Structures are given as structure tokens and as C-alpha cells.
Picture 1 (cartoon, rainbow, N blue to C red):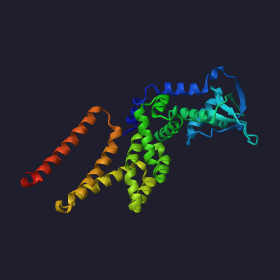
Picture 2 (cartoon, rainbow, N blue to C red):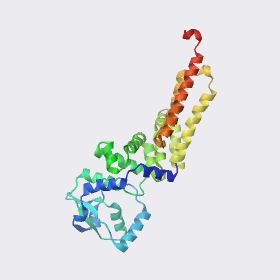
Picture 3 (cartoon, rainbow, N blue to C red):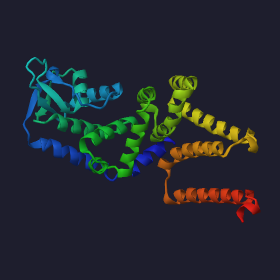
Length: 320
């Protein structure tokens, strides 16, 4: 899927997402404009322990630092007091990590801030909501933020309402995480390569996890070959190559095996493998009900042909 197509998915799946995110964050933070703004030493502010974001673009921070040098920090960060007596910090960041990091790069000693009283749960929610508002958010980070919000909100419906995505999109992200996280080696590589991955790449990877689990148990060399290929060529190339390998293997089996040596169980098992892989790769990317209808028609035709073959194979005496 192209980058433009990915952007299209991301925009069409949202129903005024920014407004929903802003509303959810405002509900937790309250009206900052009415709060007293104080100047706090930057070295007395601890990073948010619940920050889901792991990577910050250096160029973007450097650009923001230059803006801060010229115009100052235009919007105060939000912090809460730290109660631990032995802590070297006085405050913990709630929202505004990019501004805090850029202010340090710009050489500021103090930064404008609003002090709030918030629980750990509220701080975690705010960190996740703020993270989802970023323009440079990767699809992996979107997935991880949605997983975190599911733990806090409880239901897919509430998560969807809070962040402005459809419930179906939320469910798809959660399903991708469930599959990929079952293989820690693959999960770590996906996290490392996340900046180059589209949503379709994540879906394809998740769809192949059952096959990779089988490799891990019965064909460790093939599993290790896949991991090595991801490291050397990238996840997208490795996934595409594995899909072609699986489809080619199944096609070759069907082509070379003689009908009389092929049991029905073998045929059904191979057909199931091919069908599962195909559907897993397609089902989350179907653009319309019309496409879904075409697939249903093709499957109906497939089963009708099987019925015809079975009927022709049964001797007349057996059917009497």
C-alpha cells in the first residue's frame, strides 16, 4: 500500500479525531487558561513515567528549540508535584514533553508550567491521548497507544469515542497487537522498524504470525532465516517473501501430488492454509461492501464446484 493510500485510510477512518482527542484531554486537564502559570527550573522536572513515545525526531526538536529561542515557550507544560522526599525532582511532567526537551536544547533554565493534582491513572490517560495527537505518529505507536487506552477505558467503544476512531479500527489495532506480541522476537523487530511501516505492513505481519509460530516450533532454521531477513532487508521485504514462499509451496504441492496419493485430509489442510493466509491479508483492507460481496460469490462458486465434483465421483449404485 502506498504512503498516500495509508494517509487516506488514516483520514477516512476518523470522524473529527482531533476534536475528540482535544475534548478527552481537556476533560482530564481542565481549563489551563484559568490556572496560574509558574516558572519552574527545567532540571527539577522528571519525565512522564507513562510516556508511550520512545522516539523523538532530533530535527523536529532542533527546529522547535530555534523557535523557542526566538519566541519563547508559547504554551505552558503541565506538571504535578512529586511527593517523594529523596527525589532530585520537584515535579513530574504530565503533558508537553517536546516543549520540555526543546527548551533544554534551547538552553532555557526555566519553563512556564501549570501545576495540577492528577492520579497515576489520569496521567497515563493524558500521556496516551497527547501522543495520539502527534502528526508524525507511526502506526506502531498508534497501536500501542490504543492498547494502553483499552486498559484504562475498558471497552473498545469508549476508546473509539475518546480518540475519534471507528470501533472497527480500534478492534483491528488491538487484534494486530494480540497477534504480533505472541512472538517477542518479531515484536521487537516491528518496534525497531516502525518508522518505515504502513498500517498494511502491520496487518500483513499480524496475519503471518500463526505461520511463523509453526516455523518456530517445527522449522527453526526457516524462522531464523525470516528474522535475519528482517534485520538485513527490512520487515516489508521479509513479509512479502514469506507470503510468496507459502503460496508457492502450497501451489507446488497441489501440482506435483498425484490425486490417488493425496488424501482428502491433506487437500483440506492445504486449502485451509491458503484460504486463511489470503483472507487474513485481505479482510482488514477491503474498501467496500461490493468487494466483500465479490469474495462471497467466489467462495459460493468454489463450494458449488466441489459439490459437482463430489456428485460426479459417487457411483450411481452408491446413491440409490
